[in-house]
Length: 383
Image (cartoon, rainbow, N blue to C red):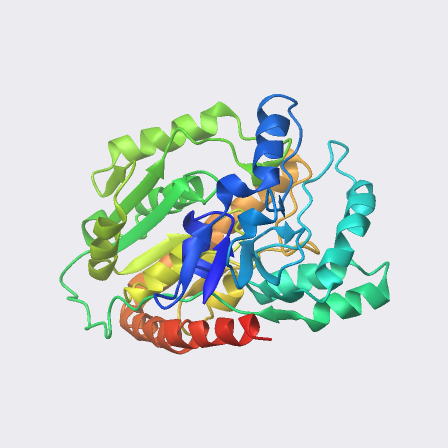
């Protein structure tokens, strides 16, 4: 089978380019909207269009089907799309009022309902919920679209088949991974551990924390208009610098990350915002159970038996609501306090690390199996 794709970046490699028996043809530079977006974003300073349209009939080649990520196809060929939030994906207007997007949604929605759109693949139950709300104004259209929408969590290669019990004489090793350090919760991680040490609630000789992420990425899109004062980042960096039990690395190649995770005890992703959480799957596949927040898909992929959750109130889109500095600070305080409680519980009963580690491995084996995922895709392609 020959499958046309519109890109071969990380999301496509995790969700589409997954079968060695399939030939994939990249239409990135043969997509009309590739050039429209270049003009819009670089020159006209307009929003990106999440659309795909082959440049010409000849450019469709011999593909059997197009499989897109977060995009809607304008073509007479068969196509499917995987999405992490909703389809059609229309970025917010400057006004921030979602109703301003209704005309564009109404224009694109018939493409999803058309017969040549064989399936829409929601990356999570959270994405399916968001999609189900998108067309509440048009029940018949919503019914047609949701009838072809399925939830398929991405596959994940199992790195470790079983996690042996940890050596109790060694420090408990926590690992945080997040290129966007502050959006992923790095600042809250540093505060939680430093407060526990300074309050003499944990012995720093029994603790090791590895932080992987770019400290220069201070902007947090989850905060909107209520970004942190520069003092928040400078304080965080000063704490990292003065404690020997913290190691910070700006970047680490993936192969080294996987080796590290197989040796570490607990992963950390107390993120402010996340569309899915691929890094959680990688940690779990290494037998490294994770502390996450409860935004979007994270409760689905990090259940209590396989990890730990920081639980805060969510809005209708399963995100944290940050509509004021006070609201931002409240969510932060709640996150730090819950992190501290979870960390203390781990030190009090470290045997749970191994229990959750092997439960995490089991859920990757059972719920993210690559062969089962390939078979599901083939069924959708051959509808």
